[in-house]
Image (cartoon, rainbow, N blue to C red; front, side, top):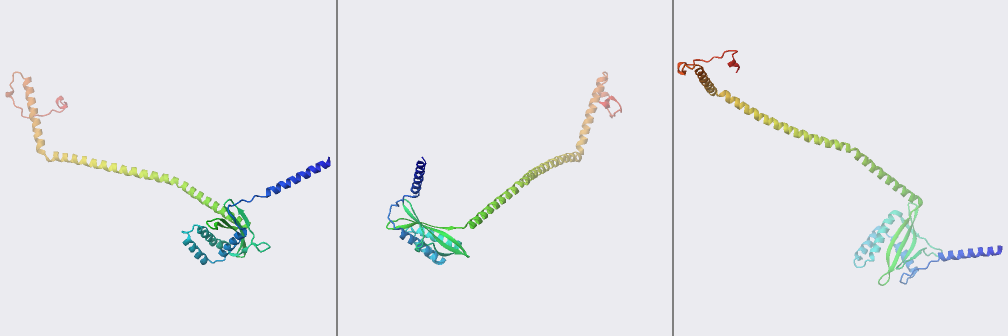
Amino acid sequence: MKKMRKLLLFGCVLTLLFSLTACNKKEEKDPGFSYDVDELVTDTVGYAESLFQMKDDELDMYSLNYRQQLNSDSSYEVLLNGIDQVKDLKKEVGNYVGFYLKEDNSPKYKKIVNDDSVTISTTARFEKNGKKMDVVVKYTYAKGDTELVKSAISYEPQYSLAHRMKQAGMNTLMGMGIVIIVLAFLSVLISLFVHVSKLEKAVVDFKQRKEERKRRKAERKSRSYDDDDDEEEEELSITDPDQTDESQEMEDTELVAVITAAIAASSQNMSKDGFVVRSIKRVPGSKWNRN
């Protein structure tokens, strides 16, 4: 019974080992064209190394040459992009040292095969201010009209953990600083809303006072016109004494006629031609005066 268990356990272990080896084995894709890996590796390392060893003025000359040929062949756009990357890369990682090599002095590389391209990845070493830094060089080759051409070029610096932590800290501080500045600006802006309402109220009060002054000014003008009219009437009444005398004489004549008619009516046997009214005097306290 124990032997059966051991045999079963041994069979399970063998099955597990075969399954793991089957998982690690990957079927290589066919890019649709024939290629020589050694030639692609040699081209990748040689072209990248030549760019790394050039000075800035030489890189500018190659860049100008590629730009002139860009209209006739679009593949030069990839090379032009690669030169621009190298110019920025050298400022950041320093001077070129060399590629990582195998025991036979051939460059270490990785091959990535896709359906329509082959990518060669290798690593170069740089040094700046005594600090070493690795850069992963990736060249992708695709089938052209007559030969394989570079369809993509990339240079990826491999920063150390300390450098990445430093960059992360700087980014965090910068983000927090921006947030604090924005919050401070918003708080100041919100605090100004009170003054804005006061300013609006002041503007409204100023307009109301201006309208009130206009209204009062118009009232004063109208009153001055009315006073001028009253003064003119008084001047007319003062400057025309003849008219007042004539009106007074007319009132006395009418009063004499009324009194004469009243006396004639009360004296039935007396003719009104028999008397003449010489003067008229008012008696103080009489009913005639009260009326």
